[in-house]
Structures are given as structure tokens and as C-alpha cells.
Length: 360
Ligand code: CP
Image 1 (cartoon, rainbow, N blue to C red):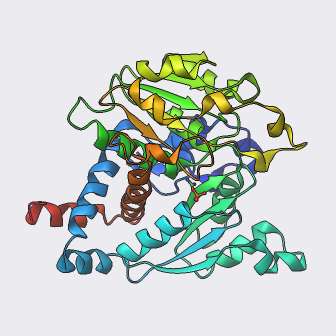
Image 2: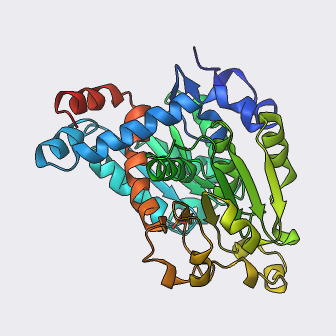
């Protein structure tokens, strides 16, 4: 299927589309050109990316395999533009680029770019794109990565854009690593289909929750639980998308009641960087913390996840329990991001062949 052309649609029309309607502009023949919204990833794409991530993980275990992976994209450069703080996303993309041989250049703070001289953010990123074959970007403005993808499509040198977190709306590659972690956690118990997943904490401003909740609609029989104080509950826009996709969900304030019912608990921190008037400090979130005592009521095969960073919402005493998989999520992010980059550049076939040939 050919990709809907971003240079054939005006920005006003394009920006007014829903994420589901935008998705065909980012994907061609089942492969992402840009990676901007969770809604562009179908079930077959998710399964292929997870299988490729496993293939990369196994290939990278040997020096010969590492050298093979590094040959894939040694002639390309990636621009890492992070206009918001990041540890995991930045470092996992940086590491993923190293794994597949991509050279990197970076701007980690707009204050070090010529934006401080009055250059527009669009001109800044267009400048970055002149030196790179791939833009990986995090930005506080929702939809800005889409704006850049659209803008570059209307130049003589369009390059793929990967959204590494935008505003409060999307964090699609975090959702990919979450899916990969869920798939690995449940590989011996029927996979993600039919599982119950609770999202807990600041769901209103949690872009990871919004992206992952959508990806779960791609699996059969999944039920979501959104557990939060009313002030921080998930937005109606994403609930409408889940309704349209036919995914059942419950809205709850009772964390202790939900814990024994679910297969996965996805904890999130209070995202008070988005506060306008210190409003988070007036919400009591103490009953939305996962404590050591909660381990006693959690199912024996259930998992505890967190996109991290955490504050108080998971007691570090929980870290040693085998059901706590949030540190595995961190490492899985590197593998699935390497898989995504290989797929964007069409190198996935060569890596799959290598795995097959070496029986990995
Ligand atoms: N999960 C996540 O996005 O972490 P960072 O903000 O550290 O990148």
C-alpha cells in the first residue's frame, strides 16, 4: 500500500485529523517511514518489531553479531534533538543507534541552539535535518514532531522523524517497549491477548499511558483499568478511541481492589511539570502507591511496570520481586528502538536473515 503523501495535504487540514486518520501518512507497506503516533502501529507491525528486537538482542551477544549489526547503518547519521529532559529515552536511542552503526549528533537543550537568537523551532529542526538522515526528537509541544515531519516532507530532503515524546499526548516508542516487555513477560502464558492491564497514577497527563492504551486495542480480549483520583483521570478523547476500537475498560479510584484482578499494573508518577498553579500538590495520591504489602495480593504471574522515572509510587523494596519488570523495560527500550530504526531504513530483512542463518 502506498503511503498517503504528507506533501499533498495542507498543514491546517492535516493537523485537524485524528491520530487514527494521520496514521496512513506515516506508514508504507506495513513499515513506518516516520514513527509519530501509537495509532500507526498495527498488530502485525508490533509482532514484527518485537520479533526483530529479539533478533537484534540475540545477534548483539557475540562480537561477530555486533559487527554485523554495526555494518547496517554505518553510512547514516541520526540527530537526537531533546528539548525536554530525558535519561532512558535519550540513552536508549543513543545506544540503539550505536548498535546498528548509526552515527549520532545531538542537541539536548534548545538553549544551546540558535533558537536563543530568535530562530523559530521549525527553522532549527530544518537546520538539524540538513546534517542527518533521521531525526529523533522530544519536544514539550504536543504535535510538534508531526509538524516537523509535515514540514520536511515539503522540502527537497525529507528525512524520517521519530517522536521520542511530545507534549502530554504521545510517547509511541515507550509504548513499543512496553508492548515488548508485556509480550516477553507473557510469552509462556498466552501472550498479551486476554490480559487485564491497570494504569495507575497521573493518567491525565501521562503520554506513555495514552500511547500504550491504544496499542493494547490491537490485542484480543484485553481489558484496561484506569485507576486515579478524579483530578488525574484519563482523558475522554482516548476513552472515545478505546470505545470505537471495542476495548472494555473500567474507571476506578480503588487501587487495592484492582491489584488482585489484573495481570499487569502500569504505575506512573505525578507529572507536575505540567502544573499551571501547583495543582498537583492539592491532590492526595498516597493511596495510589505500590507498597511491599501489595505484593501479597498481586497475582503470582502478574507484573509491575513503570515507564520511569519514579518518585514515591513504587517502594524500592518491591524492586527485588521477580514480578517487578520496570528495570527490564529500560533495557527492552534499547532493543525495540534498534529494531524500529532498522525497520525504518529497510534493514530488517538482512538482520532477520542473519538470525535465521545463525539459528538465533
Ligand atoms: N520513560 C521515559 O520517557 O523516561 P525518560 O524521560 O528518562 O526518557
